Length: 626
Image (cartoon, rainbow, N blue to C red; front, top):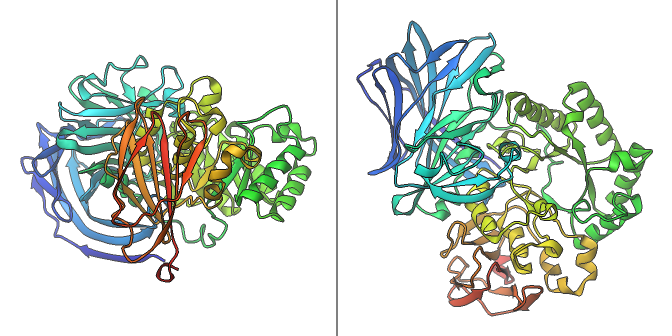
């Protein structure tokens, strides 16, 4: 249920001369932005109290050979709205609180006018350019920049080849902001988000929200701590149809890691779903999926083999199976076979997703014909792959596919794509997307290190869900089995596609201790707390609640044993819990299970081995909690 309250306070139009400064404050004045001009150039800055978040930085855009933001004559606030609302979410909680102040800023420049929309939150700031007119807009670049304090550190993703900014599948690493322009052999251009470690352990994130009818934002670093908006298309630019409304240039702010992870600004900046397109959302169902591609053998994609996966999914209580690349080419009568498999699976409570190369459905007529056949066969979702770009035509393809699938009541998983920008709020049939370095790299002889996993919850996952395909026990790389198990509880994905062969999970005694956990694994959460001890790239420790039950998951990202202090003060003091604790055996190859007595008053130290993990389920069982 959505609770909505919006109070709009309209201020009289005020014309401020170029020497004036506009002060834009967040609801409780925690963040303050200033908009002003320097020799006619539109400039902004952002502070949290005395802490600089963004030093004075340029704003502006070039459209149809006309530069906006270089010779500003007048600026004014023409509208101010206070926004208070609560929306449903699938990211770390059941509801997202949206409390902010929306400013509409009128700009006059060279006998023309345009608008900048700004949103101020206590935990973030965002702005975007709005240029009216029905004619096509040739966007030739932005002057938008972000100047970060010189003493800051920055987390960025790295992949030392041309795929870096095509697939966003890089390892998350740390450097100083002054070195960011030279740290990568691929050049100074970085993908989003960039996570900034400000002085005194405060955090900022530079990214974008609501990417529609535009090209994806990249960031070009300079030696002075500056970050300049950059596009895939380069100097040639791209064409946006009709009225130009750019994505939100977004800056998140947090005092600590818990506040960072629980920031909902990105999704709050996206529009609500179209009430007609999503009049019926009963088909949108989060769940767990089995997957045959990553553990494939000589029987891969044989109907009998896929039927075995479906049977295993049913035994595990998983809702889905994913038919990946090859189902169309390996089945002579593919639609007939798919329909039969869908019907047989549905009888067992399992439903089918199918893979499709995006290059084969970029033409809208071909797309619609394919989607009609998928829906007619009884499949419930599509995984599309190999966009390999965030150029404007590919962003348009993604939005077009989300609309076309919604019209047919199909869910979507994007692969070979950029990180999310909150579009799953507007199109809730997007259940997950890649744009992440996940477990499939382990079969490409690029095994994922533990420190990358320990960085992901505080970097890439800040943008939204990610199809990392966790739980690859049999090919886990330099991590332990319990580390892999913990990823299932730490990484957000409403379509949680688990890498391990489900038949192996059921038939190998190694996995008996964790089968009850896998069968009851939630894929969305009602509450999330980042626990003390968490440190980007070193340790990720989360407590999550689903209903009345709590789960604690911890991963060690280092090559040395680490101590974790368990103090579950978040537990309800009146409720009794049954605990299931999974830790690593000394060799890291198996699971150790225990049932300690744990309450809100518990205090204990647990040693987590190098690259290891911990999972604790606390099941509420007294009458009050049921």
